[in-house]
Length: 352
Image 1 (cartoon, rainbow, N blue to C red):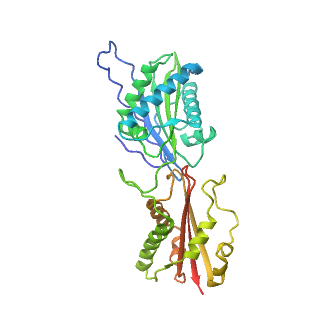
Image 2: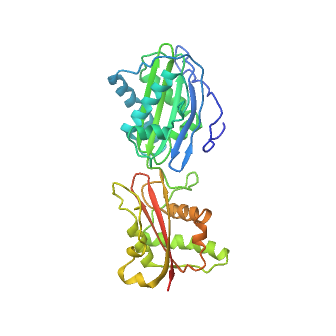
Image 3: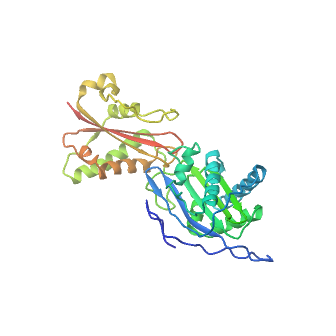
């Protein structure tokens, strides 16, 4: 099965139809499962599939019926997550609204893809429904051309079985870092049935290999790890290593927003010297700052975050500042809002 390609449209594909379950008296209609989509801020995997059909008027289930189908879909997802020792998901209004809107739109406008005809993605739909742009979002979609309304719990179970039998859809269902779930369904007698699973959550730290976990670390350990990585690069470049500076680390931490801040972001105008401890301001000839943000990258600062942020600076435009031959000290801090967004900040100083 072809793998997801970052930031690219994938080839059209059709998954194998669901097989007749044991004891069934009839063969179920063929169901198409488009390749799943998932997105974290700063990185996206958005894969599309298409299917032929004729325009149809969406016939969404009645509110009571839709709630019952959503409950059945959530039960099925959580059952499979429990089997893999993963935490249960909870209904999320933004995910539910995004899933239902996409199912109805695909039926009404006769397309089958994670991207709308205008280019809207699962992340766009989640944000339009009131979700945070910093949460990890993922989506599974399916189409059954021969299915007619009304849908029932058995149909939901068959959809779940099909998604779980596809490695890529299964990966979304069993993805770590998710907490919210939404299910949408739209069907008509002429256009068939469309179903959408939408997922959202704070995500997991960047750079982890499959099965690898990150460890939460306190501020002093964050500084030591950042210093080790930066100094390894400086030595390789022929520059003297930096020393840790408690004053610069204190200033870096004071520049970061509180974890519960409504606007979890750095200020527009930053006075670096003004954030130093009062007794330390005359100790520095110059100061420089590097900052980076990630979304869908977990709930608390970890060793993986330190590696990610320092790696970003050493591999990109921040490298020149990190390699400044006149710099003598480093301060470092990471803040997390608990809902997927993290900010890393490094202060480099030249001591007098």
